[in-house]
Length: 174
Image (cartoon, rainbow, N blue to C red):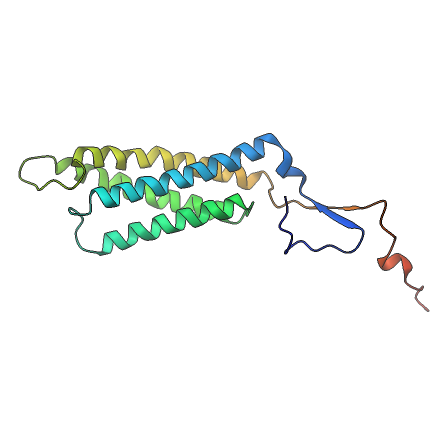
């Protein structure tokens, strides 16, 4: 499953990715994609459900950027791009830290003195706390995927192809 446009080989050479065929690597990739999409969904749900309680447009923009970044990372992970895995890990640590700091404030809004957002503030607090283990799992699986060598390529000669390239060149005159 290589990208055809980026992987043009010389005539008679076939490029393969042996690590991508292993079930454990495919399971890791699927897990990373699911965790990225789950994070984007949770952040979007928290943003929409707590929109009335968020202070200003700044947090909404930041949360929407997180959603867009996580969806893009899922798309690139689906294309076997190994370079997005460290980025996903860094964003996972950052978002997990934000969630750890933000969760108590949602629970503090549950008293009757605060106006309730579209979703109950206790539910938003639980959803925010749920982001933390999801981000921990994302960091673990992204780093596991990074160590699996998704980018390893092997060139194999096609035995039915004519021999060409350097083998047909005239010997050096020196």
